[in-house]
Length: 187
Image 1 (cartoon, rainbow, N blue to C red):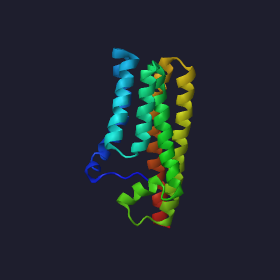
Image 2 (image 1 turned 90 degrees about the horizontal axis):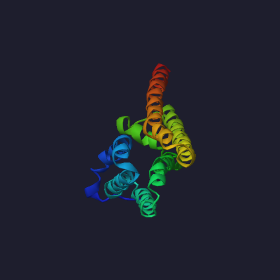
Image 3 (image 1 turned 120 degrees about the horizontal axis):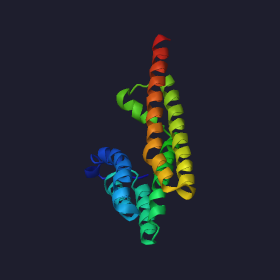
């Protein structure tokens, strides 16, 4: 189990969301202006920031080292194409791995509702499964596109469509959660 030194706990709140926002921005700005090498260097730096300041430091170290190896091996385009695969596999492992104990979504729900009812516990477990499956499917699609699709097709999927689908899943889950809460309150 990874532990965070006390002085780093405050930074973890901004580093993951920042890297999620920066990836599509880097994909649509750095790639067209400066090319694959510059984008891969940017991704290595993002992974390095996560490794230094975020949670899941071992995963970020692996991502950073793999990207660095691809960069040094002259495989910059493959490196940028595999970055979303690595991130989605990592997120799938986080979501699905949390099901062995307290599911990730339950932990998040308990931040605002510490006395989560049994219905809420069951619901959050299902939502954790859904997010884990979503991240797994997204990783598979990103891998297929990374290996066999033209760069612009991969770019549209990983820099736009996958984010749109995640936002739709989040919005849909919010609507379902409200309906489930109303049923629990009425019961």
